[in-house]
Length: 374
Image 1 (cartoon, rainbow, N blue to C red):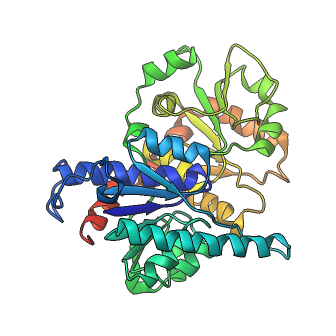
Image 2 (image 1 turned 90 degrees about the horizontal axis):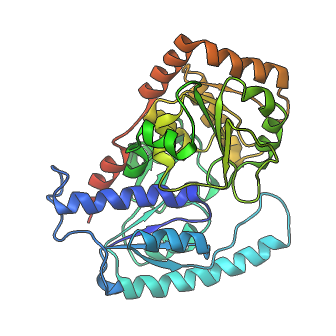
Image 3 (image 1 turned 135 degrees about the vertical axis):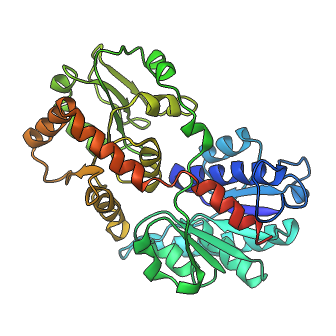
């Protein structure tokens, strides 16, 4: 059994699901090479103690629903999120994490996994620590250009650390590090342009711009763009994934807004010519795999400034433009977006640069690596 752990946002969960897809396919023989299709197909099992793939995450209802919809067992842990400033809530977080450690210890004793694959985030801390004490091998994955505090800590306990950005390597012991990229779900890469346009109710006359704020939306970015949307829709058809409760009041025939989408995301990507996005590692990986040029608004105050560093990685290579949300000149932003409507050659160059940064085999490569360790 492999136990996959992560939670707190879709940014942790979706990559785990991507790897789980490939582990199942790999063990069934869809993938070749390496650990010879493991001993038995890695598919869901009725008996939790014998299920080859099991998920552990936070108490989020959405996480449970997504995992169980994919056919996997899901267990939640109590875990406290430490703040990066003095707060009495940190004391509560420590106590809750201690409870999570006891839960983890008992769960690992019952399930007896052969390997723990942890995506990061505060929910992984008690579980990985318990796995280390039980001498269960641990592999962690770091999505961003600079790791958060939890992965910096857990990297000391893990036998292997898989990274997506070369700049993250210096934070871990060199012998543990392997650069394999950020895994993307297969369904996200199986979209069709015509199907996407039909779903959105768009035509072929104008290019499509996607505004996406990541798994939880981006209220600040949404409010900023709302000021210029009335003029942008004159030259763009816009699909806006706002996040739950973070939508705008704007309405237009060339504008579609959704809290979030799941099955249709690949089709939307296939129809998109330009994305306006946060700098979350998973969204950027999906855009790179599709070769979609981007305008990036890094999340202000992100931990260790990781979103700005992620954005710099892409903008420095000609795949994106990066703007400071708190200092952006709306006139310059509007002009840039309008110029990208007309400058098709520039869009093509940016698209090519994005493709060169893509790691479309990341999920398969990670699955192969994990299969060799069980």
